[in-house]
Length: 179
Image 1 (cartoon, rainbow, N blue to C red):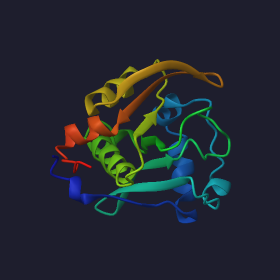
Image 2 (image 1 turned 90 degrees about the horizontal axis):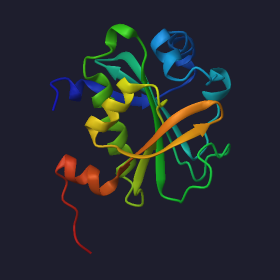
Image 3 (image 1 turned 45 degrees about the horizontal axis):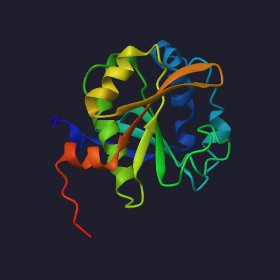
C-alpha cells in the first residue's frame, strides 16, 4: 500500500471542474491515450444518468485526475455493444504530466475498483486502452486485469481487458463469505 493512499480521494465531478477538465484534455499524454474521443464537458458535467459516475481524484485536496465509471449494459450509446448485465467499465487519467509515474493512478484505479465491487452484483470491470498504449497495458496487467480481446471502437484499435471479481478479491486479500 502506498503511503499517500489515504490522501487520495474521489469526489463527484461538477461544473466547477469544467476549466480543469478542458485543460487536462489538451495535455499531450491525455490526448495521446484517446485521440478520437472529444468530451463535451459542459454537457457531460450537467448530465447525470444512473449508469455513470464522473469523479475527480484529489491528492490532499489538489485535483490530480479523472475517473469515469459506467454500467456498459445500461449506457445509452451502447459503446461496449452487446454485453451482459452486472459489469462496469472504467476510464481513468492523470491530468498533468508531472503527476505521472508517482503511483497516483494505481491508487485511483484501486479506489475505482473498490467502488465498483462494493456492489455485490458486479462480476467484472472492463477497460479498453489503445492497443498501442503499452504503458497503460502494463499498468493494467500489473493490477491484475486480464486480456479479453483486441477490438475496434470506432476508429480506435483497443485491447479489452477485465478484472473479474474473483481476481480482485484474491489480489486484495478479501475473503468472501460462502453461500
